[in-house]
Length: 445
Image (cartoon, rainbow, N blue to C red):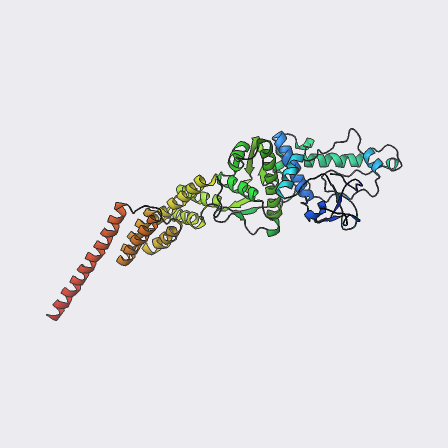
């Protein structure tokens, strides 16, 4: 990529929002112009800083500090190419550019082509610029006159401060995890993985890539932590080895940017010891609430506490990542479904003697677990307590029909239970009629 007009090739004018147009005088050229793509992907300063931090983590294995949130300093008022080149002394720290392969992955996935033509950024005011995370250096008077272009002491201090904030560590941060100490008030993101996955009430104009969302679900079901190797094996098994890591960095950067956009500033995803970890203090994830409720039920010291915790777990459950068919998903989905089923059965048992309350729980659970015979058996017993033989027979028919959908049949003990309960209710009805008849005859005599 070249910045500025290029007489030997095409020049594309790129507006602040990424819209592309041919440079003046080029619209009449025959053939296809690279500006015909219509729009290029644009990285904001915050997104660029996230990408640089991700690349630094991939090389160092150390979590990076949160990028600075203060406004960027104003651009240079006047800097000729000669003076700007001279303004970088040999001992001035320079921020390394982002990995070009990772950038290329983003362009390829976004449908953009790097063909070698010139791309020129044009702001609304007509000034040429490019999004960057480096810090402009104020030139001294001598530099502006062609003399020594060393930055002033204040400018050097500013560069070093920004360098520590973007990719390095300041002396004060040595020995501690600066990534866990954001300088701004941390945010919190509400995430749904039970049901249709996504960020709750997220900005539709700033949504996650499909793979970034898959990564978020993957980390959530693994209690927020997974090694780089596990992620690559499960999420990118078919990606070429030379590109898989760069693609993962792209998804991580996108995930961080969207979480901060929707949840507010804060550290959401860290990378200690080559493991990606969700910061539990920055998330409200429905699956984690369900698991917390189940643990609370197991540790409850009283029946009311256990019932309340089981209700929270049962009410939270929906199928994991509904509508998604990730290759790695099914074992996790089945395990979570079984946990929810066990919680529903346990809650029904705790409500023994309250058949109406039991049925409210069991009817809802049957709609989510249509092949679980344990739920039908419990519902039959609750119906028997209420004296509903027709409802028991209806449950038996429903179970038989649904199991037939998966080429199965009700177990013998389920059929025997239904027969026994209806027979008991029928016998109890005959006995009641006999007693009423005897009382009527005695009264007549």
